Each structure stands twice: as structure tokens, then as C-alpha cells.
Amino acid sequence: MDSQAKIFRNKQGDIELIPYDYKSNGYRKVLNNAYKDNLMQIIFTTSIYKRIIEKAYQKGLFVTRINFMDLLDDHDFTDIKDLVTQVNASNGNKTLINILIKEIDWFANNESIDIKSIELFDRENNQKIEIYNNGVILGEIDQFEVVKTNILSVLMV
Image (tube, rainbow, N blue to C red; front, side, top):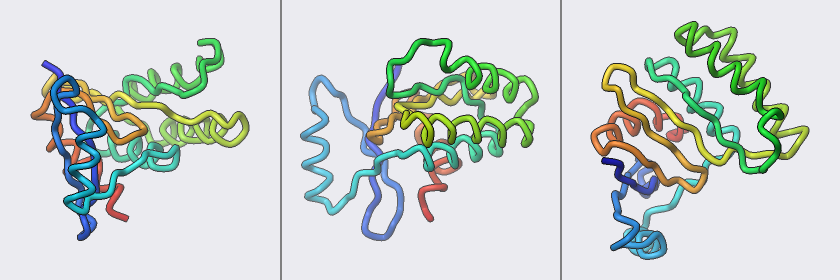
């Protein structure tokens, strides 16, 4: 069953994940409670997503989808989809990852299209997790700590 959490940073700079059920504890309430606890929300920019993508492959996870904000025709993202498939088939070939990152840069810089979310897949545990640009994470709750420890460390800069 999918769960969700919001990603925050505390005063010490550590990442904190606050699980919540949207139906019983809305997003606004989670934000208000977090601010009372002096937590700052993290908004994911394209540059953060690029670091997450690189880190995910380093840690043996796979990117299964990159969702963009703009609602352009699917064919506009064919190169990115094809590159994701190639990178996954090559088990994270660094050259292909660099080409993927350059394609993402092109969309962000030339077309002003930002990433809405990315989906990561842990083959070992057969679990998927999605990270949204507003800092919401959706997936199996046992994967949250794995992602926090192994992937979100790129936010500690």
C-alpha cells in the first residue's frame, strides 16, 4: 500500500520525513505543524533532481519515469524516455547518465520546462517510490528511510 510523506529540513540541516494521510491530515496541516517545529520544506528544482538521478544510479536504484510540468505532446519527451530505458538497460552507465542529464538541462534551460516528479525503482525490494517537486514522497513506507539515507543525502550540501 502506498504511503506519503513530506520532506523537510530541520535547523541542524538534517532531512526529516513527516508521514501523513492526505484524507485525514491534509497538506496544509502538515506544513503548519512542521513550521511550528521549525522545519523548512524542501522544494525540488531541476538541479536537485539531476543530483538525485545520479545518486539513485550510484546506489543501485533505477529511474523509471521523469514527469515534466508542461503538458506538451508525449513525442517531445521521447528522447528522455529512450535515454531512461537505455540507462536502466545498461545498469546505470555513467556516459548515458551524463547524456540524460544534458537532455534534462536542455528542457529546463531552452524550453523552461521543469520536472514535476521522478519515479525510482528498487529492483532488490521490487518497490517504487515517487518524489514530487513540492517535496512529497509517495511509495512503500519502508522505502522512505532507504531513500532518505541513500538518495536525499544530495540535499545535505
